Length: 302
Image 1 (spheres, rainbow, N blue to C red):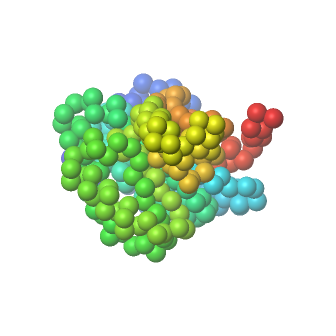
Image 2 (image 1 turned 120 degrees about the vertical axis):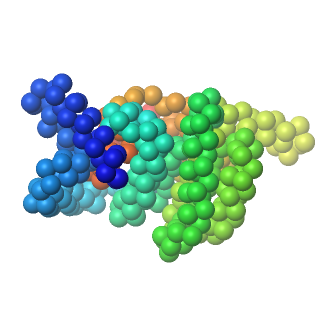
Image 3 (image 1 turned 180 degrees about the vertical axis):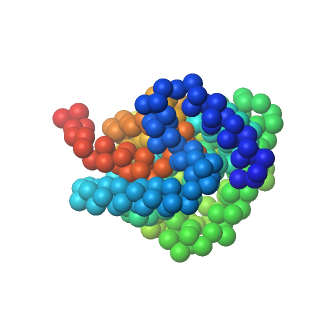
């Protein structure tokens, strides 16, 4: 973070905590990783930062020990929400908020590697997001294009054999991004250790309409009989065909809604809502979500 940005963040940080009660200040700091880092920079205390890091590492280690003794979700889906509000509260530009959110994706991949979560789906850009301001959409599209090109050369993708699927209406994307998406899927199609689904220009209702049209077309062409249309058959027409439905759907930022995400696939998913903005989402927040999932009893309607 540059000096000018840091000064803006400092100013907004102090402005925010002045409005809060003493017992709320600690909670605010604990919930935001970026604020904790900023606090250590503000007070310029290496000792503070060192002990904070060690405490976090110890708490995470103990939590991981507990988690590894129980079944790990096979598929986690994340609605990455809160980039703009995160930036607004720290006095940063909207573009900066999205950039910080983009960096968090690299961390979430590492956390999934550590827990051996084989399938990860990230809600990166919805079909409705095209209705946002022209400048924001342009900035997001630019970030998407850059990240697809970076991912193609990322050794972690190839060393860990991560198959990348871009799910959504690719025809609605700018041509260069569409071609980048198709190319990275082609290059990773034979990888099978992990699957990373990136929902781009995605909408759950649109996905169902796409499936219905293709089912109707196959029925019309006598390639499918009406009595062959089952839940598993419908699943095979979705963008996520061949991938298990999410065990856990996690949303950041405190909002408690699904926002047109994986509407068919979430039928029996466990839902977890975190009040932390996506760029400030910590490893501990992720581990708490997994631990909460493990403590629930999944009955699947029985």
